[in-house]
Length: 54
Image (cartoon, rainbow, N blue to C red; front, side):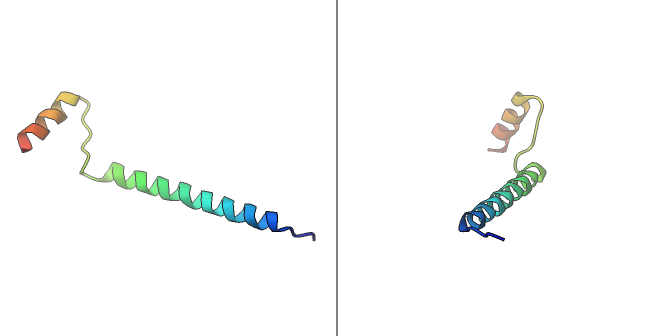
C-alpha cells in the first residue's frame, strides 16, 4: 500500500470539517431552544415587549 502524506492531510481536513459542522448544528439547536430569543410571528409584538421591559 503506497501511503502518501497528502492522504493524511486530507483525512485530517475532512475530520476537522465534520467536527465543525457537528458543532454548528449543536449550537444552532441550543440557540433555538433558549429563551433569550423569543420568536414572535408579529414583529410589533416583540418590539412592544422589549420596550415594556425597559
